[in-house]
Image 1 (cartoon, rainbow, N blue to C red):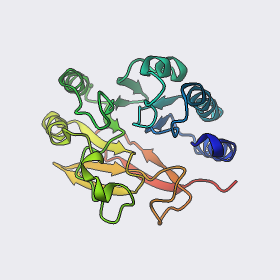
Image 2 (cartoon, rainbow, N blue to C red):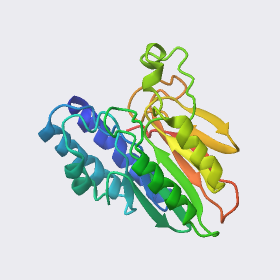
Image 3 (cartoon, rainbow, N blue to C red):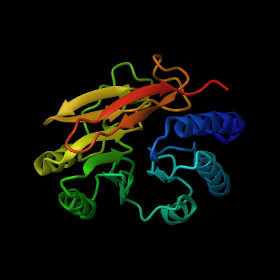
Image 4 (cartoon, one colour):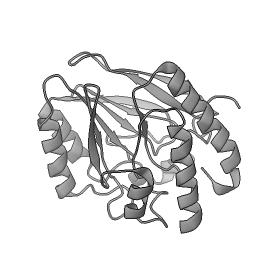
Length: 239
């Protein structure tokens, strides 16, 4: 959200939260870049408002760091505002193991640290056979197609995590990851690496992806493990 357009975005978020409630989703995962940086005070105010709007659904909400989120507001302060366990975290909910990575260590896009990668592998390997493992990362972990992109076509290295290939190797070797979800690119994109689907969602607020000019979100359906995960992209509600 941009501070100047926050009133309109608040209404969109409230409508999305109502959609989540009506659809009976189990939890919400927000993929980062929830704000367009303005100042430490303004960013904190917008983040409080965004979390409050999502929680109106009466459903737990989990948050990732995007590159715009960390310009002015320290991560520790955001962790407190957003009720995050840490910069990266793992949540077990309703038979799913949700792994929320931090791709903003140091510079935007990483590289994701070896400490975090060690934690990632352990978090996946500790999953029980009945758990479906989903991985979420703001920056892309596949190889993005930035053809015609208004920003990334001339800056392709900024689209993905710097050591995305290394991360994909870890995910593949565990043999447990059902799907990976990203933001950052502001475009809908899907690919498959080593049998794992990598899904990039468009922005909720801008129109970089002309197929979804009002932004949108995805609802992910997870059957009991090891059933295949499916997802459906929905446009942001008109308000």
